[in-house]
Length: 536
Image (cartoon, rainbow, N blue to C red; front, side, top):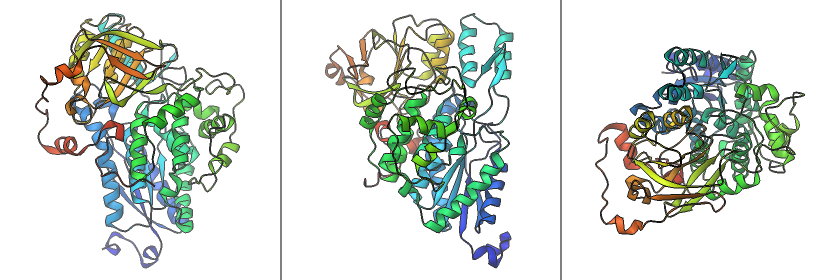
C-alpha cells in the first residue's frame, strides 16, 4: 500500500517520520503551514528519513470569539491531540514533526508529542505582522475593543470598519502575547520547539528553519531522544517563568497543566503561583504593553527570553532541547539588539512579580487563575452582577448596564457547563472599549482574555455546572478579590443556598460537545479528556 503512494524500497528502508500539520484555509494563523510542511519534509529527506504528512483541524478563536462556535475551541485541542496520536500510533512512525499555528493547535500538538513519547518536535508557524491605522500598530485585540468603543458612541461606523480592515494584514497568529505566541514561547522554554519558532510567519528565514526542523528530528531519532526526556518538571518551571516574564495569556496555565498531565509530570496550580511570585514582568508586550511578537523577535527573540531567565537565576543549567543544545547553551547564544525596549533588563522590571496568581477561598475551593495588570489595584470588592452566559453579559455591557465597582460574574461557561470553556475576549474588550476596563472586576468559571487594566479571575473551580459555589451567587452579593491574600470570597452563606440549587439542563446533548462535557476533567487539572497517567 505504501508503494502505491509512490514510496520506493529505499524510502521504506529509512525511518518513517510523520509530519502532523494543522494547515487550514480558515485562518491566517495556519494558512501558510502547507508550504512550511513541504520544507520540513525536504529537510527530513535530506537528513535520511522518509516524511509522510497528515493534517488535522483548527478552530480559530479570533473568528469563533463571541459566538457559540467558541465552544468548539478548547474541544479542538483534544481533537488535535487525539488525531495526531491516532495517525502516528496507527502507522508505527519512528518520529514526528508537528506544525502548529492558532493557539489550541500549539497546545494540542505538544500534548500529542507528550503522549506518544517519540523523537519529536513542534514547529510554530509564527506571528502575524501588526496592522497599521492612524499612526499606530494594531492587533486583533484592537478590533474587539473598537466594537466596545463603537457601542459606547466613541467611534463611528467608518472608524470601526477601518480598524477591522487594517488589523490583520497577512499570515500568522495573533500578534500580541496572546495564547498562540504565549504557548510558542513556553514550548521553546520546554525545549520541545527550536528557538527560531519565534520568527514572524512571513520572515524570509522561515523556509530554512523548517528544513532545519526536518534535520533536527532525524538527529533525535538517531540519538533516541524522546519527548518525555525533554518535558521534565524543570522544563515546565522554565516554561511558566517565561509566561510570567513576558506577560503571557492565562490560557498557559490550562495548557501547561494539560501537557504536564500527558507527560506524567507533577506540575500543578501551586507551582504556577510560586513561579509568578519569583518572576518579574520584563516584556512590554500587547495586550497590556506597547509591542508585538514581531518586535520581540527583532529584539533578540526566544533566546533573549531565556537569557533574562538565566540572569534571574530561574533557568535550569541543563536540560535537553530539540536543538541538541542545553537550554542554558541556547540562552548563552542570545544576541540582543542594542537599544531595544521590548524586553527590559532584570534591574528595571515593569512589575516585581508575574501577572498571574492562584486564588482560593469560598468561591474557588479548588483554585482559580487571576490576571492582574501592572496598574490594577491589589484588591477589589463589589456587588456581583451575575450572568449565566457570555451572551447575556455582553448584552449588558453593550446596553451600558454595567457600572464602575461591579463584579461581573459569568458562569456555566466552564469545560462541562459551556461546554467548552469559552474565552470571552468579546466581553473584556467591550468593557475596555466602553471605558470600564479599569473600574470593574470579572469572575468566571470559563476563560477571560485580553487586557481590562483591572482584575480578571477565570478558571474558577469547581465550575457552576459541577455545583461549584459560583453557581450559588445572586445579584448584589458582595465579592472580595484579595491578591496579596490569594483569596476569592463572599460574605454570604453559600451552604444555605445549596439545598435550593440543581444543575440546569445541559445546553448540548448530542455530538462531540456532549461527549466532551461527559469526559472532561476540571480546569484545575488542565481540562483534559484522557485519563491522567501516573506521575513520574
